[in-house]
Amino acid sequence: MRIYCAKVTITEDGTLIIKGLPFEAGDKVEVIVRGQESAVKRNGRYPLRGKPVRYTAPFKGVAEDDWEVLR
Image (cartoon, rainbow, N blue to C red):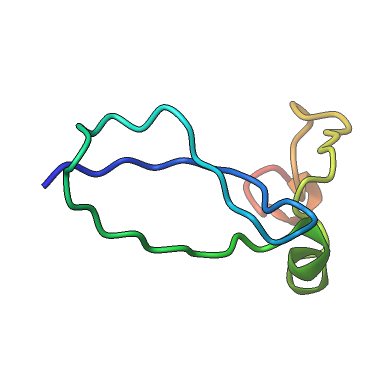
């Protein structure tokens, strides 16, 4: 079994067009359509996903005053 994956967008009239399939004419294939979650749905669950990360003083020690050895 060969598997081929394509990401396409449904047109206004609900049509799905997949071009350039790597199969021969007359081959039997199984078609499974799975929707992809939009960014709007995911933002509610993970609000920081995709946000830029900024490190302030990344090499500075953390909680140095709490170590008894350093006193």
